[in-house]
Amino acid sequence: MGLSLTNVDVVYAGVIQVLRSVSIEVPDGSMVVLLGSNGAGKTTTLKAISGLLKAELGEVTAGQVLLDGKDIRNADAATVFRQGVVQVLEGRKVLEHLTVEQNLMVGAHLRADRGAVKADLDRVFGYFPRLPDLLHRTAGYLSGGEMQMLLVSRALMARPRILVLDEPSMGLAPILVEQLFETIGRIRREEGLTILMVEQNARAAVRQCDYGYIMEAGRIVLHGTREQLENNQDVKEFYLGFSGSEGRERFRNIKHYRRRKRWLG
Amino acid sequence: MLPTGIHFESYAAETRVLKTRRSQVWLAILVAALLVAPFFAGAYLTGIASEMFITLMAVYGLYITVGMAGQINIAQSAFVGVGAFAAAKLSGYGVPVFLVIPLAAFCTGCVSVLFALPASRVKGLYLALTTLAAQAMFPIVIYALPPGWLGGLAGMPVEPLTVFGLDLGSPARLYYFTLAIVAVLTVSVFRIQHSRFGRAMIAVRDNDVAAEVMGIPVFKVKVMSFFVGSLFAGIAGACMAYVLQFVTASSFTLFASVWYLGMLIVGGLHSPLGAILGVLFITIVQESLHKVANTLMQLGAGGGGTLFALTSIILGGCILIALIFEPRGLAHRWAVLRKAFQIWPFPRS
Image (tube, rainbow over all chains, first blue to last red; front, side, top):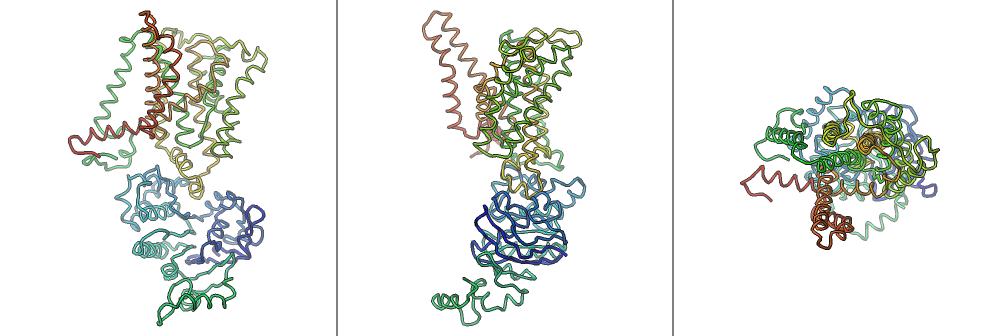
């Protein structure tokens, strides 16, 4: 079970085709990462899942988006959310006029079980011990790393089954990125959470994942398990940013190499 | 944020509006002062105060729609009008006041939902235009209906206000009547701000996409914000009907709507205190100008009449100055001042 996309096409405004026959499997309890250059269609893929395409006049025109075998193609965001798929948007979308605590409570907006919400606050603080100190700070004044912690925590407050993360490392210092991914890995192991993550920071992301997909110009061009990705020469070259023992390739060589790889377009 | 040394050990204490002992004492003093004020102020000032309370009710409503949910609304005066006409009609049937006010509020809420349903689908300037349509339609509808229904061009008289056989016609009694209602509304507006619904509205205002992915039904929250905001407008309208004892569509103009919005912005959009300070500020400036103009005229000195005519211009200037020096509103200035006193004599930024 879990989440699966089969041959999904997404078209914006009826004319711009962004995804072409994208298929992704996110089995229950796994962590899947989606890599790719800018404009490859990663965020669009996430939006196709979480039902946010409509706001941008986008639409899934072909294929299936299945959640536990049920088609949620073109469902609205509220419905998808209620099924337990919670997305953390790209770009630190905290509710800046609310305090950190109120932000967390917004995450639990639909939950009626007050006692459990309180317990969940403690659970979340266990993952991000910095948050309790910031509880009464206005979220707009947090630093980038703190905002990202808050966003992941806010999503956890909704008790998701599937957590969808869109570039959680955006604009963070390398050390923070490492910490954040470690925490995400820990959350996943301890909660048995299913995670689908889009990342630019490929190396750190691949280290935590079970399976990865690489997108280019709206298609999935490569996929494989963590070991396969870590050992694939192309992936190393273009996404992990190193090429084995002989050090970095010269730009000229890479350019030629890239040309030979037809899938990179 | 509170100064060092004040901390809480429970969530309930944290979300309380009056966090410290001292602020409770100050509030008690304020309430006492408001209660004894009519004994010291003349009938004129008492009347002004009642009028101010009514304006405050309408601005509270605007604070919920515009301040909390971020839905620009320039039809608040029309909604106040709906409340006023509903109250006039109901009181004409002999309905007692404690039923008239909630019913008028409810009518206003329902009318506002009619406009909120289409308005909540659009954003920003388009939303402003939609509410403008509501404001423009209000007098047209009143005039177009048969005069027997809502008075048409001539307007409608309102039965004098009586509560349990007690006539509340005098300025002092009206003052207590409006004070009681505004007190209830003040408590509610602060409660709403700290409630789940309030949080949802602020989330929608801050970032509607983020709110949506957190499961907040954005559309419903927007419509509800109009509804609740208009309940307040309806109550203001009902009180106004009782105070003026006459309603006519021409008193609920776009101009008044813009004034309500102006008061809220000058006071500060992000706190109910902003509504209070904004209404207080504008009323004080306006009344002082009238007072000065009156005195000048009585003394026979020139300029009194000119000053009267210039009132709006001077008020506009005051608003401009307030916004240039404190774009976040008087409520923010108040918060900064308060903090400065709290940590006195330590240095402050």
